[in-house]
Amino acid sequence: MQVFTVKGVHIDGVVACVPENKVDNESSLRELYGDEAKLIMESTGIRTRYIANPGTSSSDLCMACAQDLLEGTGTSPEKIGAVVFVTFTPDRLMPFNAAKVQDLLGLEKEIPAFDLSLACSGYAYGLYVASVFANACGRKVLLLDGDIQSAYMSPYDKSTVPVMADAGSATLISPDGNDREWKFTFYTDGSGRDTLMIPAGGSAKPFAARDLEYRDYGNDGKRKDADIYMDGFAIFRFVASDISKWLLKFLETTGESAETVDSFVPHQANMYMIRKLARKLKFDWDHTWQSGHAVGNSASATVPVTIAFDRENRLKQDGENKVLVSGFGGGLSASAGIISLDPKAYYKFFQYQKEEKE
Amino acid sequence: MEKFLELAAEVFEVEPDEITMDTIFREEIDGFSSLVGFSLIVMMEDEYGVRVPVEEFLQCKTVGDLYRKCVKE
Image (cartoon, rainbow over the protein chains, first blue to last red):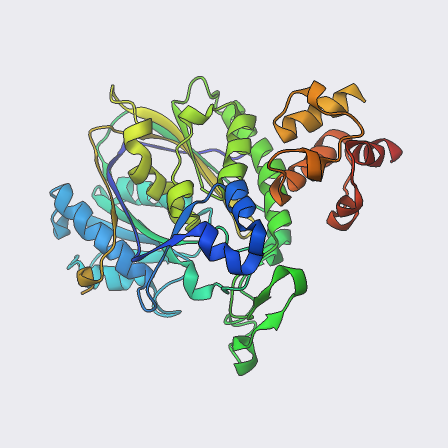
């Protein structure tokens, strides 16, 4: 197992937001599932989800978070040395979101700014890359992570509708020269790339009119080729079997365990899956950070969303918390990091309002 | 057989003595859902090395039906 380490960085703050529309999950599932709606809602544990207004973009949500984060941490734009934006739903296919962020936040032009195209595994990737850049440039790095999955969701799809949601986040990493070593590891199994994907719209299958027509997939519901397809069982198996073993190996390789790590911040795939995963890693539920029940599964942003949402319940106030963060999903791909969270850092969770749009 | 009941009980989140080989799991296990079903399939694969296709799993009615998939191979 490859373990990547980075030392001397600090998270100054994590801000996350959910978009305009709160969806009651049981009601939203009634049309698809009829009398089974309640059972489906209870089995995933996702009671409410948040969906953006049409036209609200991933950069809108993340920019709102970034503005609050810079203000809340008293960080002026010239302090930012790089921008990393994790998203698979950028505002436009070209150019990338980070360029827009550089402009709208008034950041310097002589900085690296780029997107990382990853789905649910994105946040620990972003943390690692942002930390390496922070150390390399000796300045703060802005890590944005957010997706508008609803732009690619069929309302008639029985796999995606019960869990998927939208969210945005901003994390500020600064090089402060401390001695704490963060450890990361990554996992890729591209043989499963067809199990969670958007079939059309890429260069392999540029959009055609037929991609915008609904097709009937029988018991699975209806969706367009422009929509997200998820093979729920394949993803479940990936997490319950491959990822649980891989995370145990990561803990073992780094000499860590649920005893030495304060808590676990998993990607909020659904509450059933993360409860099972936490149990396999021997983290009790009280030491497992949670937000999916209230906000849904917003892809890689679920990790920073959960940090901002649940910090009052999970963050110990006596010194730095050593936490395991991990995301897993489309690719198939996963990432994990053993990092530290400072209870004195700036944290905020809010609901995005339209008037905050520029 | 006992070991299988223990593993199945863990998936169902009940005590092992609350289920038998005759338990009709979809009807008799509180809160049984497709996710619990997925968990059973993964448990059978991890513990017994048996990869049961979802379609075959759907034909199983009792805990014993699942057990026989594991010992048959």
